[in-house]
Image 1 (cartoon, rainbow, N blue to C red):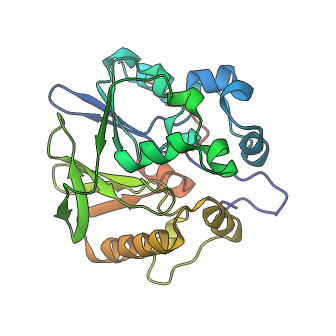
Image 2: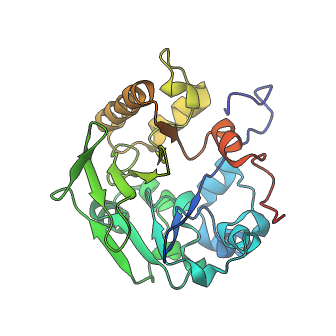
Length: 266
């Protein structure tokens, strides 16, 4: 499943990659992962289907809220949350950050709220976000271009070094988040792909992850198109670090720790 765990019967391990971005006066979280309430009450918050299929590692110390505390902040310090999409494993921690404004593509919020299919009801969990205020949503009518990608939004109230890159397919309103550093860019591509090798010149993916992406996709044509655009971008741009939400090797290379290890303040 994850491309590195030996044996078909061994439990694979995937990452749930979030980012914390410090700007002049803002503390910005990109995706939340699962939250403290998901850990405390998984059967009330998460679907039995995904609990059984994925067996998530439900430890409070692995939540974004606890790891932000390990960095010397409090959850109340987080001013903004930028979501790649509203799947349960990306938006479960929203309740842990009461002061944050949530940035999201408008079509994602609308599609998740409709709960149109059985799988929608399993993946989009209103228990995690249905009572929350402070949303800022973005439509496709006002976009710019960036590194050859032609559907990119600036985020209201945030510096121009943080951009939302529209990458539909996995969900209708799926997006990546680009962040400019001193000399290069980071691009968290969310669930636009799952296996780092999909971005190689000779791409490949594990059968398990290929099946999961097929099962979860809302628009196959858009997903494959955007995956291919990202591959072209990764092979072309030297000043770009591209990574997805769930590849364990990409997480470990960037974070400098194993995926099962909580952040420890030194």
